Image 1 (tube, rainbow, N blue to C red):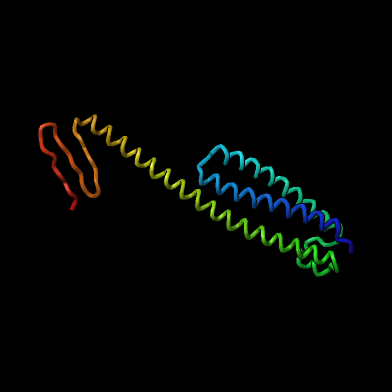
Image 2 (image 1 turned 90 degrees about the vertical axis):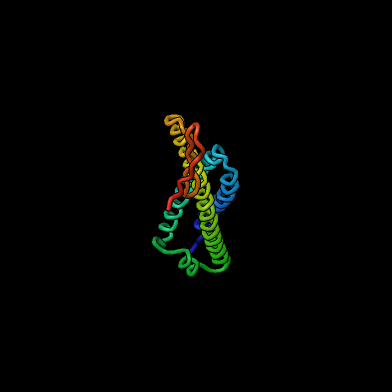
Length: 167
């Protein structure tokens, strides 16, 4: 059985996953920098790569069908090959496994990094909202109100501050 067309198709697919891996590593740096514009551009590039991956997968399915190997795994296909073709297919399988495992790891790290950045943004946003609410209360009541952990300090214009601690 001649596997040359399949080998070329699979090598093209491996190249796409290698590019995915490179993009994920670049995204790590971009996320760490917080550069939203670069991240948006990177996501557009990644979308185009997804489209290429879908086309390559469609071609692989067609090639497998033409070889009467529909539904067969790459491991089974390797068993059917011999000589140099078997070696090439084995190398391709190793490459697929490497890039898939690497993509999972980098993607997981990027996910944690994004979540951490969102947590910081959320905490800052909450702090700003509290500061704004306290500022409005100060203006409305004519009193200075300060909040601390488990305590509230309030002062009238001509009184000394009182500490009302929650018990």
